[in-house]
Image 1 (cartoon, rainbow, N blue to C red):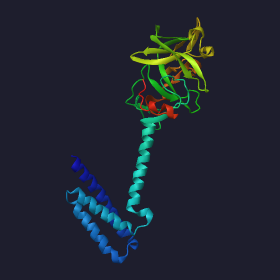
Image 2 (image 1 turned 45 degrees about the vertical axis):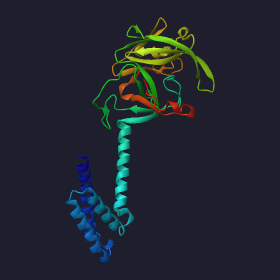
Image 3 (image 1 turned 135 degrees about the horizontal axis):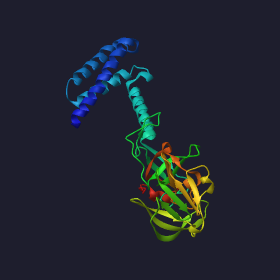
Image 4 (image 1 turned 90 degrees about the vertical axis):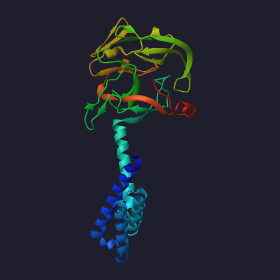
Length: 311
């Protein structure tokens, strides 16, 4: 099958060259010296004969010979080799644009809001197809699927300044999320977690800070989170978020009923994350896609993180 596929491809390319060469000789005869027209005609005859056979090497040899001889007399912008390279470059560019717009993209993480899962300087591959394929120039989706609680998602900044955020999905539409300090409750059930150890992390300003490392479980996903020592003694949310929104403050808890078509996000570095506790919900059409893997990391000391699968 691969042999016949290659032969058919070479035959199609040869036919296109044959058609264009005939057109040039008919419409642009001044390009070709009269003394060379017979040689070029013989090249076309040899290519036509090769196209009637089944030998891919003969077809490719005749095609290259014909292309080379014609390109000797054609202006640069009309040469076959230039046209083939131009088509390949344009096609690659368009394919890259489509892939970036609808399938995958690379996102850079400048902050430590997702420590320890994602380090500052990590560059992520994002699967934009994970939640459905968006029709270009519209918000309509096909093959749509719903995000799952615990997914790490890249989304547009709800403030609308064009910057992308990456956070963990905590609340789905219809969920009730309650937050206070190191307490996280979803649908009246405390999110289970286990304390691992006390660690020191980079504060992003050249210093180190003490943090408590926990293993947390959201649905069937288990991931690491960081809290400041004594996090349960402070509130760590914006009380004004309750004003005119689907949230309220009661007994020191921020309680939010996630509206339809919106989501509630938090960073894994819970006491150093600007997230839904401070600016509210994220509309569904702001979601870019699911973060999959670290494809590059900076500075060099973090290169060992390249290839890390995100969970």
